[in-house]
Amino acid sequence: MKKRLAMSAGLASVGVLLGATFLMSDKQSSDLGSQLEDTPNSNAYLAEKCKNIQTPLNESTEIHEIYPNEQGDTYSSAYGPLANSLRGTSILGYFALTDYGDLVVTPSLKSMIDYFLAALGEEPIETIIGRIEEYFTRHLEEPARSQAIGVLAEYILYKEALIDLKGIVAGNNLVAPSGHDYLTLFEYRRDARMNSLSADVYEAFFAEEDALDAYTAALLQRKRDAREDSVRSGSLVDLEGLLHEQEQNLKQLDRDRKRIQAVKEAGATAQ
Image 1 (tube, helix red, strand yellow):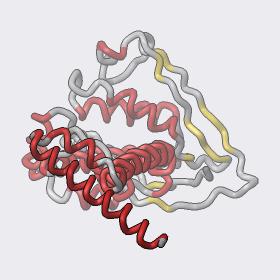
Image 2: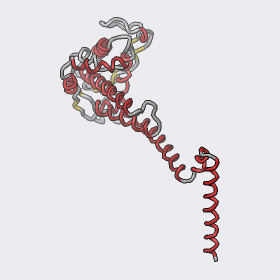
Image 3: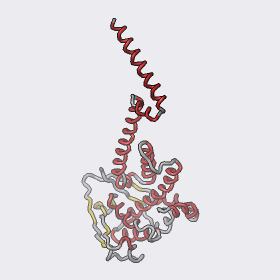
Image 4: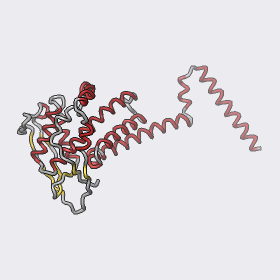
């Protein structure tokens, strides 16, 4: 998979502005509308700040990896110690940069962001996003720092889009999907990702996962189609066991009559 640069416009701070948008619980989801109303034009502002100038990597471009290797027990922050659930853990992952200091978006960047977001429910979202920005600032210089914060803003907007998806799923009774419903859910989620994220971020964060899900959905759909074809092509006899005995006998007599008629017609043709 070819890596591409994501040269994002910087964000001075997205913590306060995005405090209402990354919501997980039902209560937080229900409060989203009112919270966004308190932040005029927030979506338009974020969309502007998330714009990327995407430049293909030259084949000779060198990629350097930075491993912060911070431990949860020794982690220090202006926001205080990590949430209890993260203490004793390591902040895994690395940053990938070009010779020019530009950020290369990788799955590892998503892992870093998700590490901090795992504390949602124990800490306010403003605090979590502040920690992520602080972490980027500690280990990255410009332009990579601003680019990483731009990716974070896109990821938060994607999480907001998932709230709308949750409503669609509930409205269409797709809570426990299978077969065609699974394919529909997959398409909803993939569209939310592709519409919310730039091409570089989507490719690094979700392209591989979506490819596997597309394969799974196709298999489920094929099995469903095969079952329907089986019913149409002769397995209806099995379903007749659900009928009353009299109805079963009538259908059997009808099949016998057709079979006898077919034999007679075959004999007449042979003569």
